[in-house]
Image 1: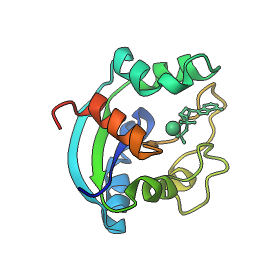
Image 2: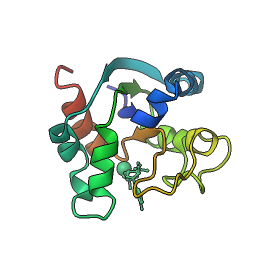
Image 3: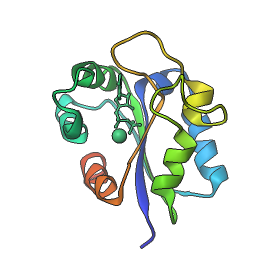
Image 4: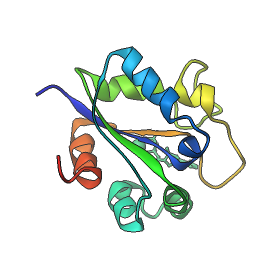
Length: 139
Ligand code: IDP
Ligand code: MG
């Protein structure tokens, strides 16, 4: 089985109607959409998803933001898609994200405690497997 990654169009991107644009970039790159759903994440899901960040100053604002409205969760597939999507997404800080990347083109700093940066993408095969288990237990 070829590599899979979990992509999330975060509440900021979903609310601004960026879901189609993000999916377009994924498909244009050549990755396959395997599964997709729209949902509002629970704090429990987000505590599991963001366990590595617990205790950091942006953790509570991050969980609050991520549970503030609907998101689109997507499983994508393709050789190298974990690194490849991280490259499409750009740097975490939207001010530093390169123009041409999703965050560089669609996100900006709003002076808040959490950076609202439109998308999440898994950062390793281990994270991808763990995250897909949280968001798509049926897969
Ligand atoms: P990533 O999404 O690029 O993998 P992570 O370090 O895993 O970045 O952080 C998860 C999310 O937490 C980021 O996408 C961003 O929304 C937020 N975040 C990360 N670092 C900071 C920070 O230093 N200040 C504010 N928000 C942050
Ligand atoms: Mg991360």
